Image (cartoon, rainbow, N blue to C red; front, side):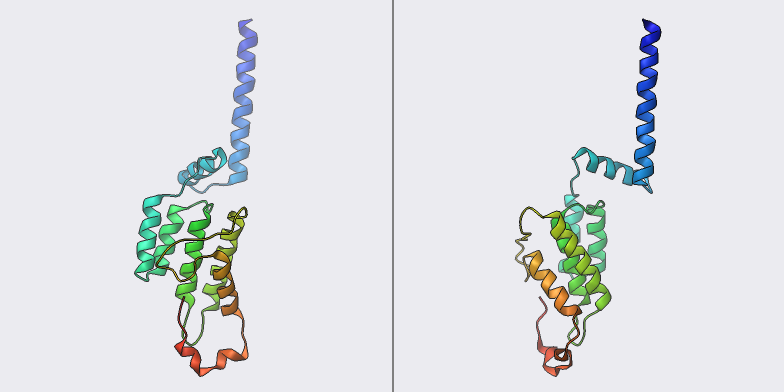
Length: 166
């Protein structure tokens, strides 16, 4: 009886080890922190680091957009939070916006981030209630980014320098 138990325990350990190897191969984490993050996502316990999110928001309000995106990247390393991705997209919009022309590369990155935010919040429209922002929905931000990427005759309008950044 004892020999049979040892065999079953050995089989169970072998299967558990094989599952770990397969998961590591599929997830391909680059660091122990990524292993921890991906494990919490898989377990359903993933949460955004609130302190880092708030630090990123403070940087955003001081118009340090690249630094803010870095903080939000550390706050949401798995890129699973719709609200955080909305702020990332907004930072790309703000940094890429210009009175004379928009930075298309930053606007494209912002569009990718806002699309991710929309995909993450598929059950309800994503709305962010922040009095410091002029756009509160992801759909509104997406429309603004898409409009900024279009090249039209209106781009040559000299009165464009008087437009307001949202």
